[in-house]
Length: 464
Image (cartoon, one colour):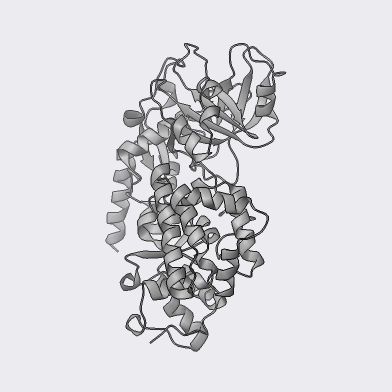
């Protein structure tokens, strides 16, 4: 039977809410396509099955209607984003692959429009063939008004097939600026086509270009931020630079830079103690742009100057700064749009040892705070708690992805001033509950001790 036409956007949203509460039965999981709504993923056919329950009082059985093209087209006409599951783990694909994929998406949409709507636009397809779909899309978005082809598809009630709709697909977000994507969204909205799950006033869709804790080379940054070839190199290679209204800091931690300068950059708790170039002063425009930015300050760090990859630490905000030469800035990372690894707040692990920061004195285990060491630890040991085995992703899905604490094995009073952390040998992933329990005693329990305590009490509970 065909999908009932009286299913509306509201019915789909009620189905999504029901899935958020109750989950998806195993047998109704999608094997190929996924509906994306505010960064969460849903099986399209099961969503329609539940939507019919709200529209017509009964849940549609999977054998009663077709999935794939029929279900996806129905949802797309209502403004929902449905993509091939292949793209879910491929949003950070290379630029050339993304460009080729976008070109194919636009061609496929045009062929569908020609077949289903009688839309035959030889000039458009010639432009795309000669210049590429990305270039054509950017030209269309720079215009003050929509094209005649856009109007034709609007009249046919198929704005889901426009180049503007393709621009808003999440796997192509790195090909277009936020302004271009917002123009596409608003142009569709003006014609009463709302792309569901995209709201540029929402933090969840106003995505950050970089992911905290991931590796990026300077070439990756060029690609993601669309830095023209003639604007690359130069100051990008010497520590920090500006591009448009944003600033980019590339810090070396515990290693001399490629230019031979060795600054005492270091992490202090949740902060980064950082130094500018040798002759830098607060009065310099480049430093003022860091302290009083018009845009954002993206901060990357590495521990080996020969490694082209940096770990993205996050958007920095100048917490304190000192008019020394070189300039000294204390960076904090608390932007609410970024998902920073969770850590225990100002953990008191060994009161006998006082760690002195540049601007504060607190008892902390700074080695558990170091984001580069944390990443190396997890890369080697994984995300399972080494005490109880709990894995947040397995239990909570996407909301628990890449969430875990790390625990430093050595008491601070054993650590000498020249101590250098070995992330693989000295750190272990633990869940927040076990992390807190490890530090219930001073000196802290060992992981093996806590595992034995946990197992003893599990066995004891089984006796009753």
